[in-house]
Length: 309
Image (cartoon, rainbow, N blue to C red; front, top):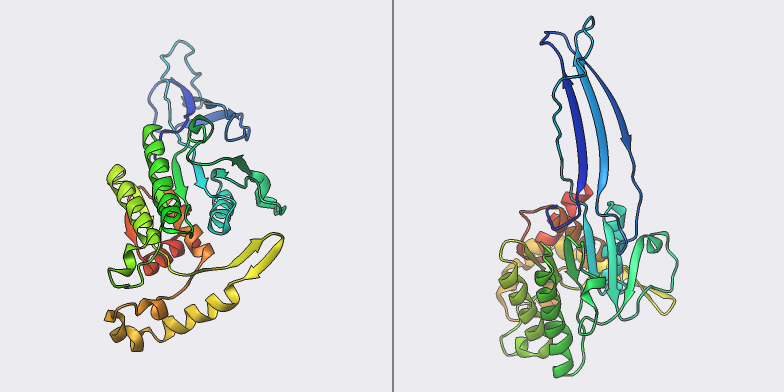
């Protein structure tokens, strides 16, 4: 994954002797690595390698010229906006399981439950409209926003649209190379229904992502997302409904496809998708520089499958 990340430096010193058809390489490698927090990581990690090449009966020439090689390996650091929510926590969990450093920004901060992955995330409590981005975006290689919600018209425009626009522009200003937005399927709704604050806010956010990140912006448009949702210490098993419904709709899609052109038909026919698939699709987006644009429900499933393999 490319990005304005901190560098992993390798200094390689090579001592060369007379040419030979038979060579032997002796390498001594010392490597020091620590796992710092997202906000206090070391900028440089170093790996020093000294190699000598010589025929069995020839001693290395200590006066030979040396070659220094510096290799840049860019660490993956993800900022999850709304990381303590249903979708955001699934993304955070999937990312840390793949070795990606994660920082979550949300108004509720660290979740109340104590799953093992929670300790591997840096939790910041704050609001995108007022946060000090220096504490959030420095060193990030990708941002994923799960911001969204319901309310009156103005509230929906603000949280679905304006909040994401602020985040996109902040990420761009800080040189974050990739932005991923969790948006929503349009359900084949007639235009007048898409004028609600919820959909206009989401589409405004999408336009901002694709405008500021034409070759690196990712918009995922899932439908109903199911999984085990934790609310105030209770677990709501949305997968008990979503998983069998997804299987049924996919098994019958050849029969229902002719109905897909009917207005609002996707309210019944769009298959649900697992929150784990959405999370894995985000991991795929982080690691694949050629993964950008708008992705449908089926394309999200395919992207998740690439990570599962």
